[in-house]
Image (tube, rainbow, N blue to C red):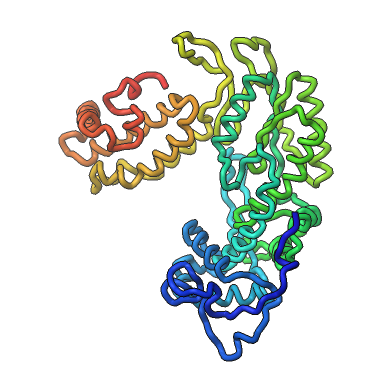
Length: 465
């Protein structure tokens, strides 16, 4: 499929009202529309690239909704909005003229989830995020229909839970799993291969121009040092998920798997992937082929985390070195389950991983609930229910009882909050727990995890998870 940006005739656009109509939703109008700036002779100027002002406006709305940190210019979203009309017009004008050059990307080291070290997150400026969102929106429309149905990451409809659900069902039908982990994926992508993949789907000169400039934009580290890049795409930029994990891996992995191993289903979310095989021999052959394919594309597997896993359950009682794996925050392993007839059996199922539970508990401790004695219980619920409900919505989809220990821990912190808030409960944890239990009976929906059933007066408060 070819893009339409370059094969359309170049249209002269006024820097003023690009939508041709006034009112909300049309850039170029003062009422919430920032791009109108009429200048003498502006109507006679023809821009080299036909970039709609509406696309810039919609990109701004998305960037504003996502918030995000400031880039190297230390300009926040709020500060950018202070001169919204001028800033958006300047950005559109430069992009349409081909004179937009991305500034360096702020490098922010953050700890890896598994605690094995740090990874670098690239934080573009607000204006650069808007420009990237404009290009990403254009490209997304071109490539989305071509993506493999088992590619789930950063797409409009499929979700991570869809990937986990598909993986769960296939683990019941296939005995072996190839659990894949790519080493330093975002830092390793060859620019030439990525640009070839983008050019295959768009001949719009401005798209290729800005993608090339973003790929080579240097990283600025906290000490001010600038580091150039000849490969990779910064993790954290607005366009990297589309370029790296969707377009590049579509050719490096998805399409290749469909051609080479049509009988081997897989699930891929960004750079996390799982493939399903009938036999151990098939699994090892597939793993060897994937290793060679990724090497051709400039990528390497993390051998310490890549493994062949046996899906052990009541019908597959064999033994193997690995009988569990973690995918998208869920650990798949043999678990005791109950059938619809009430019979217990061992099933190979997903549940929230230990690493995810550790992260949730760490986040709860960061809230310092027990020190918020100036707040009421209703205040605390309003402040943190959104996060708690998000955990329930995601990690509670499968085998939700594994969440209960984490929420019992949260209840115990609420007990400490009550002991600190009320003097009469200062040294009486049992009385504080009884107080919370009474509130939970009267208002069972006050906290999201209370609605789930994990209340101070519940068996889940003291029972096994």
